Length: 121
Image 1: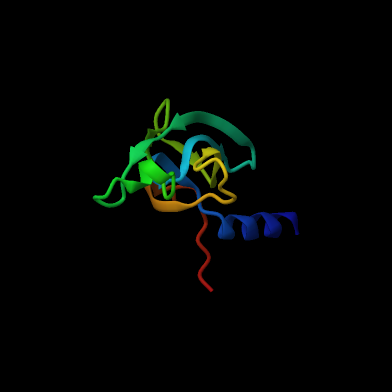
Image 2 (image 1 turned 120 degrees about the vertical axis):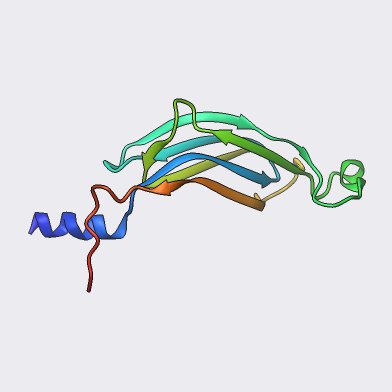
């Protein structure tokens, strides 16, 4: 029965090898955490974005509305196998903002299917 439960978990979670990501958000700084196949969450790094205009106008700098930051992260130590990526968004802008927003997120990596059992129903 415990083997069957283990197989069920493996069917739901495919390991992903993360090499990095590119993100545009209203958060100036973010912490990156990954969870491995043993459900152990590990802190990876903190990255900081640079100001990024999503259009050609520069009014966002004047009135502090829709201020976006772009960050590009390469995983330190090389790609690592994981099942979950968690981003902790810090320094959300403008300071009175009550929510975090994303304009763009691109993950760089691949599925790691080497040790997985893919069930065919």
